[in-house]
Image 1 (cartoon, helix red, strand yellow):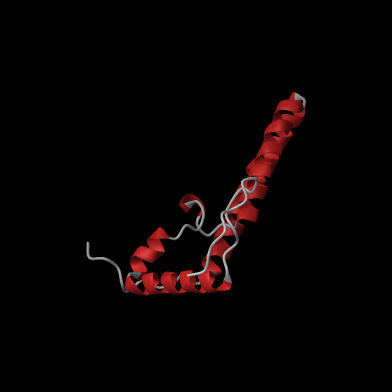
Image 2: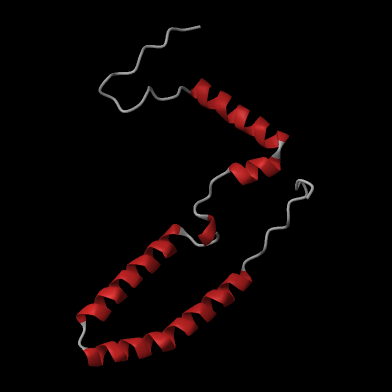
Length: 118
């Protein structure tokens, strides 16, 4: 077995993986996925489960728009606030309807046949 030098004390991590080590890890991951695909699906982290199916960009823009809206509601005069609220009451249902139509066009993945028994 070849000698592995210790990592530099100033670096934040160890040395980068070699191609052989990456291949071994990929093979190990593939064999573990093949042994129990249900467990593999449950263990893989794909982001917050609350927002499954929503891309991080959409989530980011939604948060940004909400922050801008809150700042606008605080900073605008009273008459403008009422107009902004009316505009939102008209636009939010339209946006939700468009989102629902687009979500209906996406194919639904079939349920896994390798589910654990209840």
